[in-house]
Length: 403
Ligand code: SF4
Ligand code: SF4
Image (cartoon, rainbow, N blue to C red; front, side, top):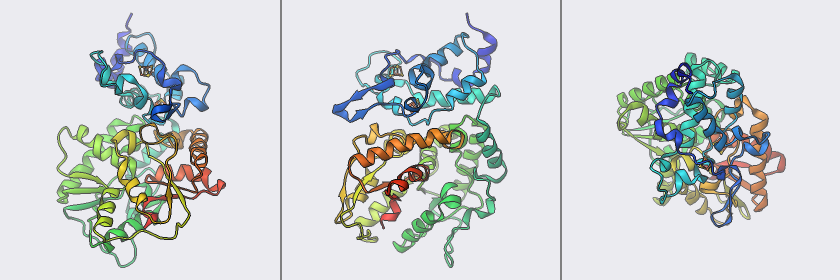
């Protein structure tokens, strides 16, 4: 019997309607292994938690139904489990209900796992059980200084190389994000230098650029995420942006997929990833790649927010394959079946030990194929993989380190 009072609190889940009934409880999201398509297991969290149902997709889907039908209530205990998910989307990539074009259940192919988890988190926030304490601290700061790193907004461009003066308006805008300006300044500095070297002069909309809102969205702080998104969309539009270049995988997913949903219509600009631009500049002969990786065996780690979430797999690989004198080698789990680095969905900040255990498995994937460099294009993946890989003597590079 439904508990109407409880249903009334589930405003985000309720918006998803029949989507919540797509799971047929087959259990493939528990441990599917499909050698022919390079799939070896599914949920990175399940492998390092007690392994009970709520830690992987099938249990989450049952919980959601239980909540909607009034058989379960939101609670702190539930929140503590639901936040132990990197929102990597590997369950979505495995599930027949989301992937099989021949599915004949009327609602099956619309099952969108991470959308459901994010809605559940938003309802946990509404009910006062989410996000986790560390998320709340980070996001309180984000409200004040527009970044989740406890830094001052005015310092977002402290990385800027001396003597470089970029416009604040223009058709081409570089969206900086937060992680690179505040935590990996060498990456953003290098990215801008590459664009300038190739004759491009992107605008930066500082001080109007705020956090993209990814952390807030993934952890269920929807009101804040929407506020940040609408601010950025207006600022980019007012700056005359026609093309917005993004480097960070989290920003890319948020601008590309979440912003149109939040805005409610097509964005007034196109969102492109930095690897698309770098590839083009390489083909045009305006940039050159390093030549000091001789005898290197490089592998590429697909960031979940870029790969599975946005179906973006090839441009980074095309750049790596243009390096001379190196071997590009795929890990056995790649593209849609890539193993997550462990950092996403707020796991790194709230459950750092879990994040590191997952990263260790991913580094083992790289070691297994004999890679001596891991290349990726996400500051979260880089940071988390590096914490394990460097102890193993395997450098983790950003794509711009190849130039
Ligand atoms: S989420 Fe998909 S794979 Fe997992 S039990 Fe449900 S239908 Fe099966
Ligand atoms: S999104 Fe990733 S971590 Fe979360 S349940 Fe699915 S496979 Fe597991």
